[in-house]
Structure formats: structure tokens, C-alpha cells
Amino acid sequence: MYKLGVEEWLVSAVMSMYTGAKTVVRTVYGNSNGFEVKVGMHQGLVLSPLLFVIIMEAVSREFRVSLPWELLYADDLVVIAETEDDLIKRLSEWKSFVENRGMRVNINKTHSVVY
Image (cartoon, rainbow, N blue to C red; front, side):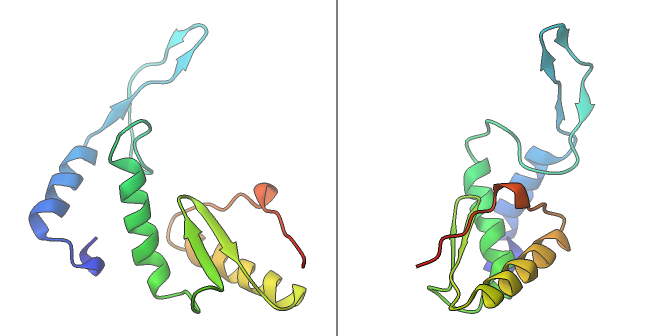
């Protein structure tokens, strides 16, 4: 958020919402004991989708080649390439880039379209 010029008071407010946050897991056998959430976005929090977009914008600004070759929409990424080799290379670079910043990429949900 700092990289995008968000004011200190707003960054502090968001950080305070996440500091010490606890959750439980619901199962058919009842709820688990509460535990602290140290990574990720809060599920169901109205602010979470906006925070995710802000984070992805800040992270991807230093990496994107140029539009329209890479498009972000919510938690999806579209990579456009002229050859299959270029596409595989760009996807591998994106995967490494975001994973080095603590995020995960689910390759099993990755699809390609050839025109």
C-alpha cells in the first residue's frame, strides 16, 4: 500500500484490523479452537477483495511487461503470448515472481487457449 501512495493513517487502520486476528474452522463435529491468522486475507471481510487488488497492483507493477499482454482480474491472471514457448516462459516467471512474495499459484487451475 505504501508503494501506491496510500496515506499512513489508512495503512495503519488496515494493519490494525489484521493484527492479532483469530478464527475458527467449522466442521460437522463443531468448531475448532480459535487460532491466530498470520497470512492471507480475511474470508468474508468486505475490504478483502479491494485489499487483494491493491496488493496485486503493487506487486505486479514492477513485473508486468505491458498491457494487453498481462491482465489481472480479481484473483485471475490472463497472459497473452505469440508462441506457446513464450507463454510457458511468462507463466513460469509470474509463478516465481508471486511465490517469492509469499503467494501461491494453483497450476492445476491453469488453462490455455490457442487462437
